Image 1 (cartoon, rainbow, N blue to C red):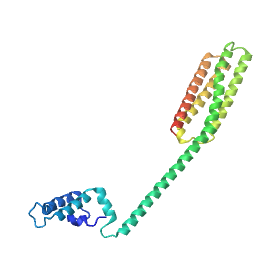
Image 2 (image 1 turned 90 degrees about the vertical axis):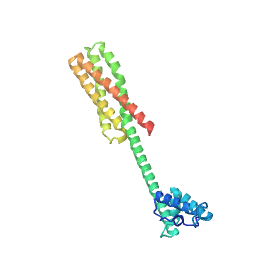
Image 3 (image 1 turned 45 degrees about the horizontal axis):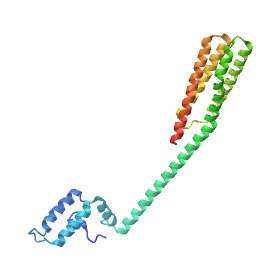
Image 4 (image 1 turned 120 degrees about the vertical axis):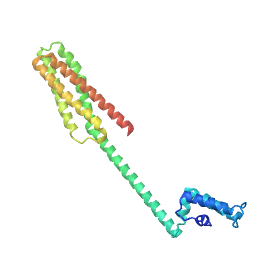
Length: 241
């Protein structure tokens, strides 16, 4: 425990700046140094001055001293207030951590629910109809004017339309979490392109115009790419959560 007042020793006030403390120290060293001819020169005096300066020039040691012994206040009051402040800061930190943890849990729960109720069912159904497109086109290409083959193709288009309509309803069934905005956007445009592709295929079935068939296939190709991008974005998101 410090048994002397370093401020009084250096003849400065408790609010003295580092520059003022240094200036006072130099002045007193000249007075108290044993080699000087000053009347106050004495080994004990220079020792006290050095000790006071070593304490006050170190900002951490000075603050610790001030915390233990404020001028005009009792040590007990300062210590009690410091303890109250520490406890308050600790409580605020714990409250923020608890709130952040609850928020993260809520966000994670919302994300998992969206994946389970929206993304997974849509992705699963899209897989079924997209894989069937090429075999259906190949089968129809044998003879587009064959009624039986065309009827089979039209049944496929009806299945596709039912899946897309159901997927769009599922997509709108709950809000998208903010964290999956990119995934949801890919999924949304994927469904739109599928719907446009089905329109083109139906026009082909009515007119036998090859440009409609080509346009429908291009729409499905773009839709497949968007579905792939949605999968990639979701995997990237899950890897950082």
